[in-house]
Length: 280
Image 1 (cartoon, rainbow, N blue to C red):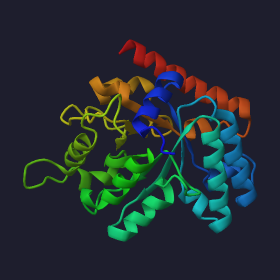
Image 2 (cartoon, helix red, strand yellow; image 1 turned 90 degrees about the vertical axis):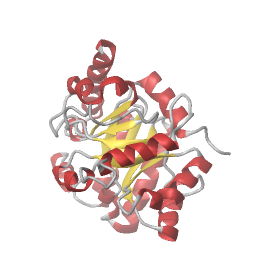
Image 3 (cartoon, rainbow, N blue to C red; image 1 turned 180 degrees about the vertical axis):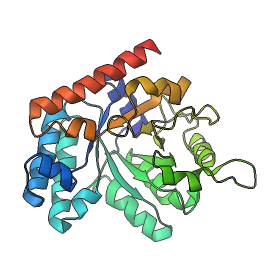
Image 4 (cartoon, rainbow, N blue to C red; image 1 turned 60 degrees about the vertical axis):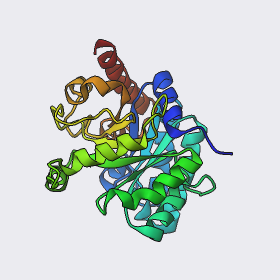
């Protein structure tokens, strides 16, 4: 059975639980901070603890696939279980894999994460459009077919991104703005929210020169350890603030392995974001 469109489900989750997205990023230094070994057993303990702590209360969990893939098939098995348990607890899962390729290879990536029968089926997938936006068409089609979504890298928070995303095309529009324009077309007419979002860094400051009103969600990394705060979000996103999904990873994860401490940290960020939305 095909799910409701991702945008519909995300809008409902954001309205009911608030828009916070918590990352699951079990990199070596965090495992060590938690007193865990940098092995599959540590990976499993880390991931299970994060899911237990917050999957029942936040709108979105975002596992970074690379931190699981580095352990090979056993790490991917942990990722599969984490995705399934997070979704069972009511969180939407955005797989942060940043896949991007052409033709049958892009189709295979899409089938890995966006087909409803795939072991790693996720509610949405991060993708890179820098082989041309049209290269994402297999993922767009499969996402529509299965009620899933995409988050397309558009204006990312890493400083290196500017050399590509701010490059100006012959039509005078830069690459980041071009990606936003493509997403506006994808989401045209969708209610209450389109399923095709953009990744836009919360650390970027004033983005009023860009049209962020794509009728889709804006995944906003950079809150917490990267320096942005919930109070910064209105200045970055302006009138589309309600469609922003602020992502916090280390700002929550550093409070583990205690479940209560993780939960309290997520709740603090969620409360700050709620206050910011109410004041905007």
